[in-house]
Image 1: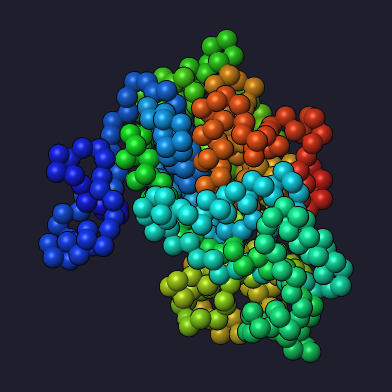
Image 2 (image 1 turned 45 degrees about the vertical axis):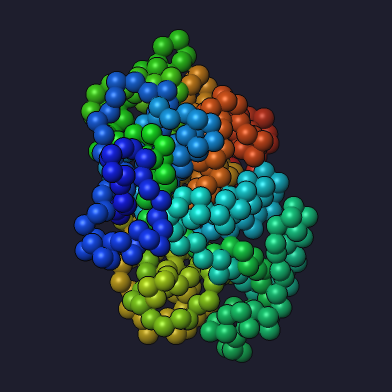
Length: 431
């Protein structure tokens, strides 16, 4: 666990990180550091209970305390915080969306990312190295021009690059005449990039704890107390906990948990695999996505190449990968970066994705009073962490959505206001 210097009276509030605290640690053999957050016993009741100790749940608790002054909050996690999708993603942060309902939401998230380390007084290792989407045909160039124009009209940075400009940005891609998918150009968002997933979880946990939030680990929710259409609390493996309001932020396990509350949601759980290579010297400058297939790659600060592909295509809750998808992803990667064939693959894993019917998230009210939903994130969960917590906290505090997540309401499906970025229709595994 990360550690932080504690005040003399051992109160809940902790001192800020600073150059002086680092120097003092070096002079005292690091003996003055104490846990960055407490490990309290759950209380009998809270004003708000957040189910899910990943980035979204912890961010929600942090902003409930910081923005709305609601500090009698518990975050319940069935394992350890960050043990779900928060620790099983490819850490990409971007806001290059086409449709209005997504564009403003993710741009707000990107702006929060840009000041997050300072806000949390914790280095989340946000690196604005750029996200480049490759185009392999004139038709794709036209499509990217449309997306780029829409982004710029919404005040979001976007650059349409020619083939030569792509070569200048990522010279190690296959630009040869023998390339299976010739590169025509690409769409670049320079403000986008990557962040360290563990640091994001730890930073929000520390910030929430400092403001009075209880983070309860190894506490699985097994049911809900609901009377006359209103939630009154949750049943857990550590006893019954009463709550005026309950927020669900459990990603791929949302359907199972919602079913315990009598809800059937328009999402499916699918596996999305990722993998990392052995470390090497700098090869990929930014984040690159392959326009001819679902493949994306970036390089971590440790030097490993992090890449992933498409969904497995079947429903599952297993957090493990499989060799057929690994082979498929690597085949696509080799067509874009032939020199990947000389690398060894260190490990691969899977995250459980909660795929919505239109490929966009659901964040807002549920049919049960006092129960709030944060789910359906598909591929967008990690990048949305700050804005998700920001707007979910607002929704819980005010019992009404923020204008940024108002288009992402659950009832958009029955109202016909879907936000289908890719135009694939109501088929979750195609988004």
